[in-house]
Length: 545
Image (cartoon, rainbow, N blue to C red; front, side, top):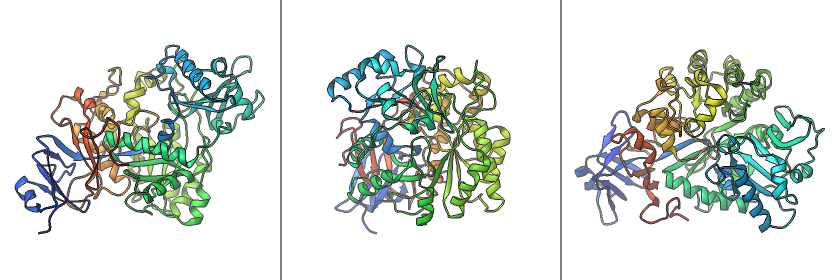
């Protein structure tokens, strides 16, 4: 018997394998798990070079898979002015931060920020160009809302971007004007693409991705699905992999068409002949990403019934006739599709588009996805099952911004928001996600919310849609691995799987539900290599450089 590289003993192992859900020892060789079971058998693999980790009763489980985030964008937000609610609880606080930045740089330099949320600020309103003009009149300023579906720009940024009061709204976008027809500075959806903010360099992206990876490792995340991959992103991931500086597995979804300030690559991808699954263990192409509507926070998600106290029903980007042929071209070329659809109107367009394609190209085996999929009807759930569609459910939204959702949509509609129990009963795989940087990327609040259906304020929404702890954990492990057709090697502890694991501060199956969001990764491993440890690093910093 050949010796092992790494052996974990004296712990409680949650394998996430329904056929053999628990063990107390795990053996790793050449980056793979070769045994999960009893300590006595595991120790038979010891030889001179074997590292034995005594878990001291702690829990070992597969590390997390984030099935819908924006890694490179998150990294860049870590380089921008932090406007998240914790850092800027008011417009006054935003203005102070922007003033500090303007005072520290040259006149004319752009100031970019991220993360403001009007629903969590003292004034309960969006910042305006006039707010920003007060503190940075000579610097162009653009601050993106946390949802990424809106941005506010000051007068200088609007001027340099050629946006004036007579600029027409782009299709699928809105340039907000006040009652006098004046620009407020708020740009919604595709209107953000009119902004002329400078592009980041690869050096910036590398710096940001390094910081992002440190966060991922501290959260126990070792695989991420990049849902907005453009040329620079793919170059970034490949460069870091070549330099042996990519300590997270990246699963890119190529941004298909020009939308929201992102450049589409549909024609180039099809011409080159990329197919889903192309790549290696570190970077593996998943498919094409499309968008159909906006966000609930910005009241741009396409819903059938108006938002509370308004006549607004959101923005629907495309019709079936427009989007289905584009999706079909990708599918015929061997590329899976992920399509953003939050409101029921958008979900309807997504499903009808898939149905049209299915009449010509069978889809059931492909594992195509509807992203976010917040408000599907019971009919839509049945249709999704028939088409073999997955729901990339942003359950993190319910925890972090669910209270705002409730205000915008009302109690009755929110009962069936993020319907995970219904997904399961309908036979639909629904991996959980945070849509980082839209909400915080730590999976534990999402897992907590799957189990309790509680928002950050403690409000319970749709209690009948609760999952068990085991089911909630699967949403971030085996179900997420299924979404990349890797359920045999990722998100599970069993022979043949990758040794991507983490040691936890507490056993999630043994603590009270309220303690779930307090659980932390004590150490994180990729391919059996330690990339994070609370014993060797500051919280949130990877030990792999």
